[in-house]
Length: 212
Image (cartoon, rainbow, N blue to C red; front, side, top):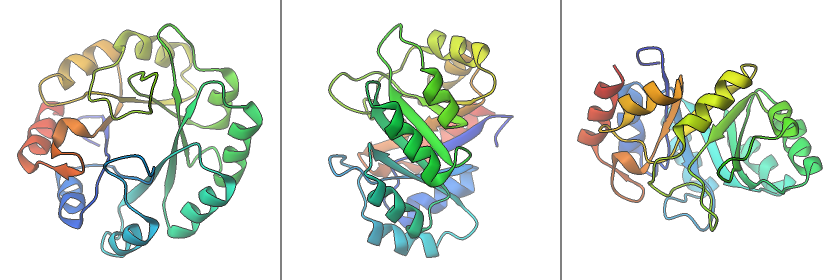
């Protein structure tokens, strides 16, 4: 935790970047498993990194995983499970994810259109909700800032959940983002990269300094 704000660095693909993120103060290390992502790693690649990162909290990031795939993620040794999904995903599917890993370990990231509210069934299924920038054609990773006022409304209206702000965050806007959203947990990815999956040590250091 940095100045009262929890930090997740996502899209990690190498040991060097993961270790640096940890040294910079990241509370969570995120690894993308979605096949269509340029930051994707396999469970086999994660297994190598996992054993070299003892004591670090590791988050599996996937898109609408089948039950068997989610079970495989559990078996691989992840601590938390961040799932991106369409808002029209059946409530029974969301409930199944929650039953498989438990609401305390599940991070749900609904693809939330402008003006929409996170449904009660989603808020009940997971303690942690990630609000990322809306993309009608994809899930996260846009590099664009989201609706910070919408985040603030959700956080104030539903204090029983932990809310994580994601989308286009970088050293140059994180102070404004925190002021506008009231976020106490943030997720950074492309804002600290030189290329997809390649973190920039100086950008990450600057981001952390801006959090302080």
